[in-house]
Length: 389
Image (cartoon, rainbow, N blue to C red; front, side, top):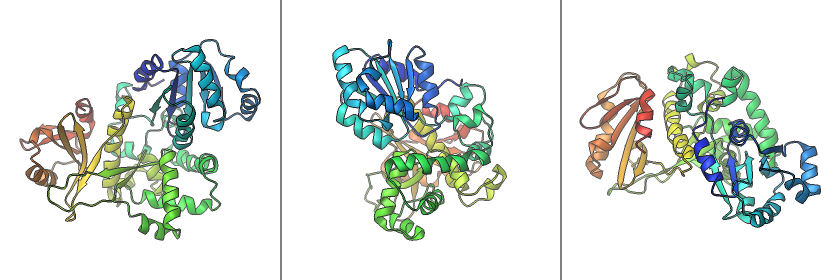
């Protein structure tokens, strides 16, 4: 088993809260994580209809059968249990008594907020980070291969080809997970919508234009986008609020939690297609930003990253706040450093007063060095930057 970085935080929170919830996309490794972290706990999955029936018919008996603790997988399948869990943990006053997992963040959190507020700690587990693969000795040094393959654990555990994995993943996602959130009658249009989103990876999200491209209403597009966010398929990066006397864009940017899934939706069949693909730069940017998101979530913190872009098109790809400092990152897929990579950062530093030591270019090459006006970081050395956050 590849050690997950989030394990330390999971065990820590289980020593403080009676209930810990681990959410994340399907196949991100939630079950493997909690079973390895709590090997003595009784494990049940509510995906099993027989188990779910037993749980709903006699919830008190079902929840009190454990001796040391209980893992309830896909807990959103039976939210009625949460009120009973509340009563049990209030009486027992034990830490780490229940570990809940789920792949529908919205459904799970909605029910938790109603019944378990103040009693539950919540963690989000995404697919592997490249840092986790590096620590396990199987890091991928070919960035194109990493973008194309993605980071879902099953691809590495079973050696499945991305071409075989992702189409079935999408089919299962639409037929099972989406129906739990909203019953969509036209599944083919919904899949078209996801593919249209993939084509807009790393771009400003114009929801009206996206809706028109899919032949649906803007209300439907917003609803479907919420589904993709709730089930950990896509996320939105918000624009930076400071304008420095410049007009800024107000639209967010759209990213996928996994670049392998985005590649599949874009009909990319092998990594050799990537360098000439129109979305290559955006996919590289997506991969790097995902590493930031995963690093933050694995610490149990909430990602609060953003980007900056003015009406003239000048843009900083990623901005992070650290204490009272602002860190600015430009992300470039090129494998050879070019001084033009610094152009927007130099402009940003001039209008914002940001110092060079808080300015970074992350690029597709391998060498890292200090330009004086900013630090140039090869993508494989990203871990050196993340540990500073």
